Length: 461
Image 1 (spheres, rainbow, N blue to C red):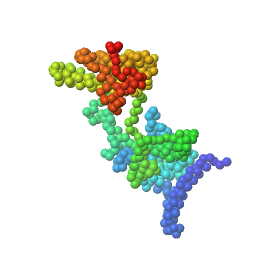
Image 2: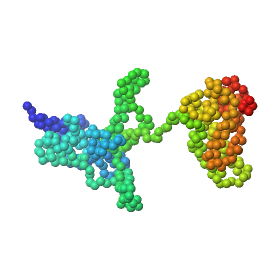
Image 3: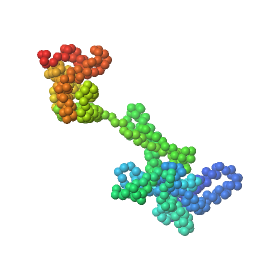
């Protein structure tokens, strides 16, 4: 029976030699058979010669998961290799979600990237670099028959993932000074940590791969075609609105990193615009006996009331100018009141006041649910008399005076012609503006119900 360990060592040796043969063949194709450089090239790609040179050149590159150059191509600070599985597991998405299945990036001299391509080769699901980091004896034997030589090369290759020198930032890198603690003196520079954010290269590569598969993969294409054909499909597909592409490295993406080169310099940026809020619709004023508290919470109403209160608290002289200014504030509030009522009348369904949770007083029901008169005889009878606008005016006056700490004489508000104020019946009859007002809609209902065209009051009964 063959020794399993011996077979595994041979497998590592074959993996390395197949890699070197492939690269040699690619260069041979560019040379004629009688070219004198042919022999020198073949010697260069002999396993022992190439690995010795690779162990020397590997110091020119560094394996990283978080790199600096994407932040600025001329930055010269530290890069980091942090295995995702060793990171703290947060609820938020980050490099830690990659687990053991991640693509490490490489920065440094692009001419030495062929060394990393060798170390990425996999056998039994593990890369050559991983098994060397684990000090696997079979992998070491695959490098060289000389144990000391193999150990030296392995040490050089494993240094690929180690930090180089003392951690340092750079003037062209992003930097953030963070106060060490809440109790620290912010005026003392010594109390700050210098944070140097890096680019999560391995995570960005996984995002790129995932989005590309979702956008251009065969499964996604089939799902989209099924939708166009109005056919069923076992899976859906993903869309990424407002997706942007950041190009790194220009015409030489390999100068940024190996993974950036594999992406052609393309890095996806997901849309991060604020959400476009959609109103959930106007809610009926249920479980309350009046809509005036809700009306009073409107920002524009609060602003006008605040200005009117400030004006009255200034104790203005009893002049015509004062009266006109005060009336202007009240008119502004009345405009808001009519708009508030119109919004409820248009948005809520007919007869919404029949809801068992509607506790509005009768006059506010008549005011805010006029179309209920089409199907409710008792409601129609009360609504046709049109004495409820005066009651609404009085309720408005009581509400406003409560907001002003009783600074406004209530009689002046009661003296308003509330039928005209609330119905806005000034536009000419049969005009487009008339039909658009509440008064116009009420007149339309009155004609539909064959009610009198004039507006009677109970005093005229």
